[in-house]
View 1: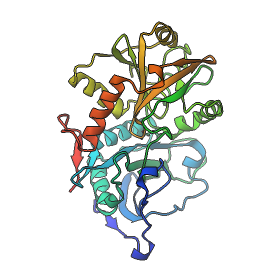
View 2 (view 1 turned 60 degrees about the vertical axis):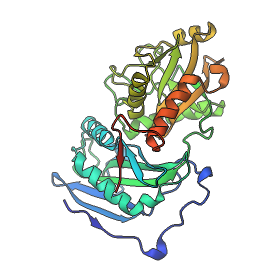
View 3 (view 1 turned 60 degrees about the horizontal axis):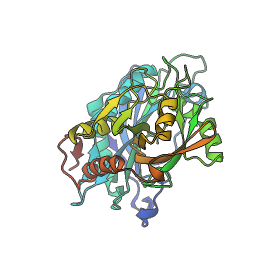
Length: 357
Ligand code: COI
């Protein structure tokens, strides 16, 4: 399919942020967006247009039944000025897994990557130079058919928008405080937790807001059957260092998002010879380990969150400090390697970096 392009008028191009050190997450958008429609059984009309509002029927199915999925990836500026994507094919593969779960027709993954590269030929200059900033890329699909019966939509819109971002948490690469949620749950077996469906994020809002009111940056979700096993944070997967070994929850229950940063952390750990395991982690086990000094580090991983050290867990209204509230040694090692590869300060023996022309 040929991509048609309508460029923004030069006089309407937006000023790019000058103070990249104070960029936050998700407030600023580049000049253009990619769009593609689905109707009459086919994806069609791929196009790049100036970033701007959509026209949508008030009966569009996404507005009523939340049939929507998304991805998140980043473009980094390397020291020599070249732009690089990190594992983009894996993001588009996961988008199709989400599509299948949400009854959305599959998309051509190779074409999506071509489309993204076309968009970045125009807007790649929005990629920041600051060492901790990047260009966040948000591909997503919404159900657009005007119809109020509950069934899969027969019309969709796929889009990619981008924008320069700084750290996801205001703390940056500094330990955050996490509230362990023992009442609300994020995902049940057989549900949506293993895919990137907007609905999962909507259902997380109330509990996250309540935790924020108590002073916590994020929530750690427990499993919905026993309210006991650690799942994920919502904006990131969780890792703990227990008895010197990195541990993270397995994906087998289908209730945890298979994070690409999570997978990358495990591969990096293996390559650096750091012991690790995927196993069920009960919150009472973690609390006991904290009390006896065997829980030495905790951190989260995500595209937006990168690697975020966790300095405190609050469970049943009690605080449990981890790594003296500082960044642990293993957390720092994994951060340095991953971020080094992403930003081109370190070689990429993993084959994850895709340089742009
Ligand atoms: C990401 O890390 O890109 C995510 O999708 C998490 C989020 C900001 C919801």
